[in-house]
Image (cartoon, rainbow, N blue to C red; front, side):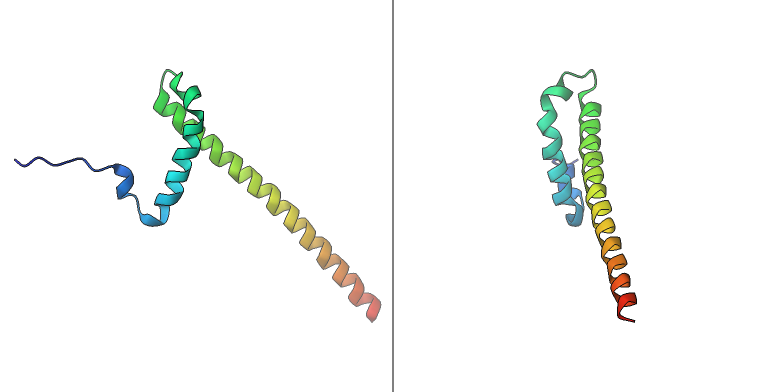
Length: 86
């Protein structure tokens, strides 16, 4: 039986996702003091990562809503200008 070294599981993640994964792991590690004081640190670390992702989604939705509103306003103004020209 040959000795097989364990590979880091993160190296096995598809390249298209790996950079995003590393970024999220680094972001979650900013809360290390909090999750290390938990009864289940690995679970708490996942919840920190979920919290970070939820904040990112919330922030993106705010920006998207703002842009959609601005586009609707521009569209409405364009329609009014077209009506005036007729």
